Image (cartoon, rainbow, N blue to C red; front, side):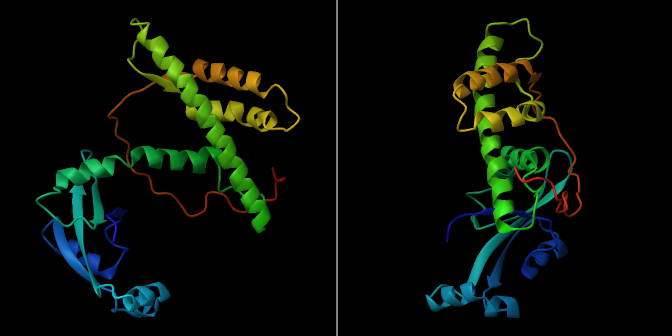
Length: 232
């Protein structure tokens, strides 16, 4: 079994993880039986693993960690050696997921990958892949722009902040339609247009303020109901 660290809400997960809630400790090791419970015992994947000789119980470690802003987070991991992996190590591991979560948020709320124009498999795949493609090209443009921004900032010590980056949300809104047009197979000037978009991204730079804290906001279910707009 590979190593893993999973965040969960402290309640709705495997029933065995409830032991942490009732415990006075913040770091305990539990065993999970693959044969207990109807869902597990009838799961075809679990049956296959058991038939291959995998152990009937899995030992995992569950932790309750308090972040610097006072919020408690719950983790479950296969890294059970407490001497080798301390709670502080898991705080560091947890913090490393931030960039990924920020980009997932960008995909959902700016690129709107869940805002499908139809209900068929074809239309959903078309919507999703076209948005991801445009989002990836936009990221490439920002990467190139920010390399140039970094160089210019180093050459200008009078700037208020030591780091700047392109405003991802603003530039995506300005560039999205231009990127779609740039991808037209009949477009012969896409390299020039790409360079123009890099220059545009440089204009919309914002300072990087590190170590800021944001409260976690609970959201509803579906942000976008199925609508009937024209498929891209």
